[in-house]
Image (cartoon, rainbow, N blue to C red):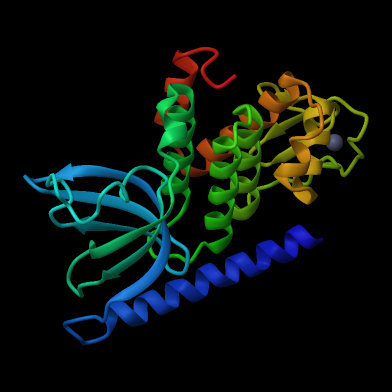
Length: 280
Ligand SMILES: [Zn+2]
């Protein structure tokens, strides 16, 4: 119940953000005031000789892209603030005719750079960034996603083994997106699946009688873990002892739902699959 309320609020927030965005962008002004927001850097790329193109999630304004002028110069004022997952306070302004905002200044609040010296961690962060970019529309307020990313990044920075935070991330991405099927009953006949061998597909969870060929089974342990993820904090789940197979099962099913929703394969997921054991 609490989850569905959260979800309704989330959809409402996204709609409100879209309306605000249309009003802002459509307004007949040529220069916009400088905005200030907390942000998480998702990725950044070299742009031209001296600049960087930055993809970030603003806490108050949603996912955006912008240009940080001079960020590639040796004595850049941006320092290490544009590294992946840097948690920053950012000042930027939007220009009416451009898709990209101009980033004026960043102040580092928290860095996750040290943790990413581990290759497996950098792959995990890349997967989280890719999923976030794929599921969130630009300028759509997504504060719950912002908090989710911080929770995940902090757990990994604190040394958590990667599978559980990633499974938790994938679970909540699906839940916040509004694509989570009911986890306790068959979506076709309504039968209780608490003790049944269920399968999961885009259209929901299915009891053995309703399962169609090609639908992937999800284990009872994975379903139990998923139900707990809906109501318990990651911190608490990390103290429990879940079987690796159940954690992987949740992660795989949730990432499948993400891929079905965005209608393409996640590149970084393929990379982690090419490197067996990287996310163990
Ligand atoms: Zn059924």
